[in-house]
Structures are given as C-alpha cells and as structure tokens.
Image (cartoon, rainbow, N blue to C red; front, top):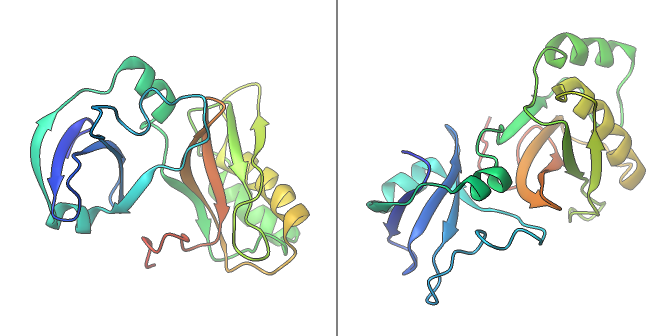
Length: 193
C-alpha cells in the first residue's frame, strides 16, 4: 500500500484515496460526484479523517489508480506523523503519581514527534470530543511533553478514571495536526490490544 493509491471498495461507489496508514489503520479521502476530494482543498476547517482497519480495507477494495499527494496535501495531512502514540496501560490520565511520571519519562522522553505545534482534543464525561487546545514547543515535541500536557487538558475536562492513556490522530485543525486524547485502546475500535 502507498500514499495516493486510489481504490474501488465493496461498500461505497466513491473512489477512496489513501492519505495515511500504519499497520493497523488507514486514513482515506473520498472523491465526490463533482470530482472533488473531501479533505483536499478544505484546509480551513476542522477535520476528522475517514478511517478503517487496514485488514478490512485490504479485503474489501481493489487498486484502480494513483494520484500523488500534492505538497499542500502533505503539509496538511502530515502522513509522516504517527497515527497513535504514547499508549500505555500503566497510568491513567487523572492518576499520575511520581512513579507514573518517572515511568512515562523513561518510556517516552526520547521519542520525538516531527512537529513543534499540534492540537490536542480531550474527551468529555459522555465520551464526545471537547474543544481542541494548541500545544507548542521551541523544537519538535517529545511524546513525554505531549502526554504531560494532555494530562492537564484531560483532567480539566473530565475527572473520570481512564483505562490507560494514548493519543490518536484525528485530522487537522487550523493547519495543525489534530490528535484526540484517548485511552490505551482507541475509541474507533481499531486497536484490540
């Protein structure tokens, strides 16, 4: 599978174009009847990429073409960034202690995200997304920095105990990569372990 590949699927008449993927999941764009893509050209709005498990996608689709991502698409879609990171069951968003912070630092302080500014989106008490918060650094962010900021943001919105921690790519907002603050397993049901 490659970025820009276009597929015909068993479950939709519209062609799907690959805009990101990893071992678990694929992000895709859809071509509408007016010959426009859902996300390409709509850079001013807040997005949540279309997604599905890579296994389902591979079993229900057939390659029909290829259209390289443009420079602008690559700038906004950021397929170079991880689709998920900072996942662990050893701590919860609202119960870090000094031991938890030490563990997180040893595990995630040396993992760099190729961005100095991203949007973090917390989840509310009823599970929906709350307003995103921009976080930034003078240099590329580390996963550890992001996790600490996500803890502050998540705690301010929702005091319920989480089942582990994790950050998951949503799309983009204000031209920045957008990540949801989540638990160890993603809310989309893609991750099983």
